[in-house]
Length: 307
Figure: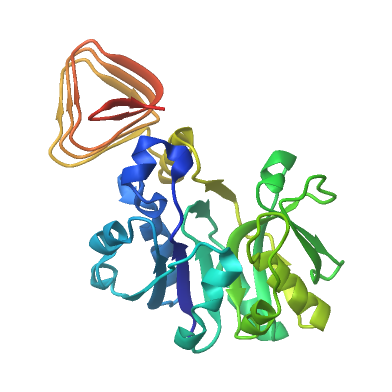
């Protein structure tokens, strides 16, 4: 049976003051922490044992998830004391890994209903690694992630971290399925000049160069790397569309008369005055909005509009 690993130690510096108080993996997407969507996606594949790597505000993640019993899974926490790159973070986990495992970056919100195909390809081809990919029209998104080069039969021949000039539209999406051979690659991974870190893509390239089977599957329908506040609006819009809803309302809310909501999410304990409207907005918990307020494309907290 597969294990699940979620890297949740990063800093949300580009989320502004909100990121200083809230680790990105527990940012609410349609009133549910991002990391819970990831746990549920892997649990649907039969994964029940999870390792969550924590760092920045790690106690908040532990408070949110506990031991995992609310989702009928088991969660073990490992603290990443130094930020030396993804390969370094994964390398720390070798004592806890007992076989093939999924690895997810904790700030990726995605929809991948065919994620099970990664398991099938792994077992059928005895792969050392299977990469979840997306055919990306926007090359800027590839530049922020990594590009994947494949042969005609889907075998990965090269991966390039944050390519300046992508020569392929196949993007790696921060979702991986590894067997224990990845630790062999990590042990041989040098620090890079790019960011002075141990890059996981370099470890994967070492597996490729060793001749180990590495495959890529375009199983990601959409994905958002939660980086800026406006990304929260994008994530919620995707989730509302997936659920077929115009808006979602949390618990214990008081909504005034003659209010309208379009593609918006309302958190818990929210008060909205009469004659107000929300258009592509995210209203966080414990917010009070006066009557005759009209908001568009914003995230609203108890401190006001987040930017």
